[in-house]
Image (cartoon, rainbow over all chains, first blue to last red; front, side, top):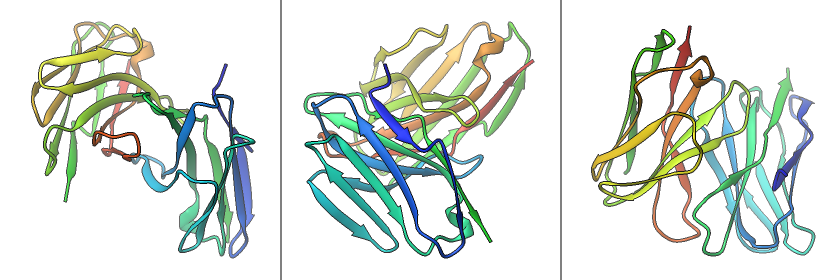
Length: 111
Length: 113
């Protein structure tokens, strides 16, 4: 069973619009969460980490964590064509060495 | 600043041939090192990790092996490639401590024919 589930699988957003990506975990041990972005042919790059309930904003990107519902989201405002990529949610629990990745959301920004 | 370099960038290899992929991390002492595999458009599957020189733990069995001959180097290899080995191989490093971010290299694309 996938411990970190992402939705939607794919998403198309007009340029300048808001993209919202979701991630739900099934393990209450998860305490640390990251969002990664991977452009085609490149290695994934860490976008943001979030460890506390609430919102964390970095530029156009806002992550939201709700540990009670095991839900983390990423919102991208003023989406740009360069935001088109595969986005991964990743989670880690206390005393766990293995980062668990979701299956990814493919984001396409249409000019 | 830490840098991570993977080689080769891409390989086309025949089934049954040997493989060696490498990874070097500069600017970070005694990092935790990882190998991941990714099918095209797929999720990231951890293969191996190492917390110190000479010590490597296997996470999944895919007829691959890994070694850490130096503090800053991680090698992935196999004696005989299978078609199922095709994919994108990513080396990554992370500092100790639960809240540390995992940083990936640019990857090595492998096509087995």
